[in-house]
Length: 438
Image (cartoon, rainbow, N blue to C red):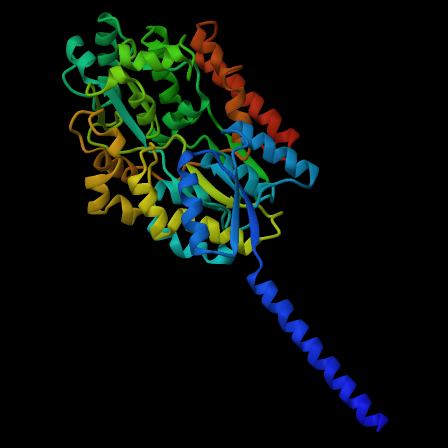
């Protein structure tokens, strides 16, 4: 009898245990995972709702901890502290190698990210895949566009957008005589990098293991070509070097005609459009070429989404990254967005719907031009092979203090770029890299 009771007790105990175990599994299956995402582009807000609807067990805590270098400082602080880093971060392409080579990012190949490579523009995919890994997924492109004030150009006798850099120089002289600058550039390292890239220069080379660097900003023949050209523009005072970028005066200059054009990433369209005086006056053209008949382009800006290696929710983080970069819902948001967001997905860039309906808020700013068509063309001309330094954020931050002296006329650009290179070599060695054999 006692044996029977004991057996019954054990049976009941097991049944209860299994029931509780089943409840635990049910609770676990229905539990919610929260991931933290750091990002600043406004478009990402529009993707959180659709993602959570498609993934009801994942909640997204979206935080804007600052744009550009402010976010990178916050990431660096969290990594150094060993806690507080997000699960997912929006990281611009130029900054991605720094975090990948530091071991701070998960290789997205483990989730099958590499199978998507053909879906993305050459320029964007080239910037997220290196050292046998995929370290972020492209979400926003920034092909260079040549945007110009046709009304000001016409008055100065420049009847069409220059097709070569020599024509650009001649146009700059005509515009200066008419009271306008062709460009505003007070010493922007990102802009200088884009010019090098578009000229075919390869000033930075990184070994596959990420330990050895080569920096050649002064002897590379194509880099030298850019340096000499920009020095001529500075010598003849054909650039507005005094107006501070992102100041109210800078924004107004694109409406009042004091600056007649911009060669910048496609995001610049929004800055121009924000000035009511600019509406209908501006046009978009291909960036000037070094050789007549070429169609070569580069980028300045653009954002990828990466999964931090420290994340405890790798699968959920990847699902979010895949969704915002590749899903049909995300493509729809990109299509209707009134932001100056540039898709990186080839199927969207080539779609009839995008060509007909993209950028509704920008209609009329650039006359009757088809903006999506111009962007798709500019994106297709971006060339591969350009590498950023694994400390590009630092490199651009010290550009004004070194090469920047040339923009104020107190130093030659050759000497300034030489000082910039010296600074980059010293910093790289201090960070543990072997730079130029040191």
